Amino acid sequence: MPPIPRRLLSRLVVPIALLGLAGVLTGCSQVAIIKSAQVQARFDSARGNNPLAAADAASLQEALRVRAQVWSLHIDTTPPAAGNVDVKNAQAVRAGRAKFTAFTMTLKASAQSTVEGFSARGQQGEQVYCESLIQSVAQAGYTGMRSIAVEVYFNGSHHSTLSWQASTGFVYKVLDGK
Image (cartoon, rainbow, N blue to C red):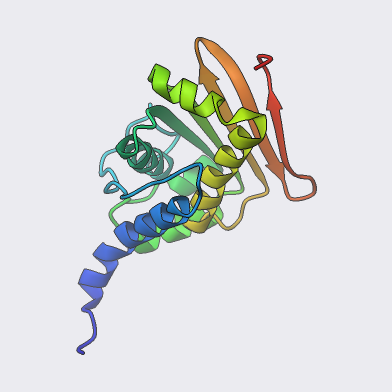
């Protein structure tokens, strides 16, 4: 079989990485993703604090939507400048993701069925769901993380927070008593 031309390979790396992300989530009973979205080409500050974070948030949001899990996602990364890359350039994307040291994902439920499905898992199931999202992101190349947070909002309130530090591991707190 002839080798894949470098130009074609560089265009395929990001979609392949996102399919890997979808594959990881498919293995989790809490998050079943059947396909992933293309990386968005334009920067949308409503999705993230830099072009790479925004593109990753849009892709993950679309992948979850396909499974009827309707969340609005926003990702903030530190340092933000590491994500000021051409998201169509797979090498730049990999390099940018590897430079991030802190990551905050904000999930806002956009449908009552999402709230009900998330809450039906119970506190432990909610934690596993949030951890699976973080693990999928990490496997997409976020390798330099020292601090991670997932903030979950629904019904007009801050429902829960998941935090991770290398020294403590995951800590999940429900903030609204559910």
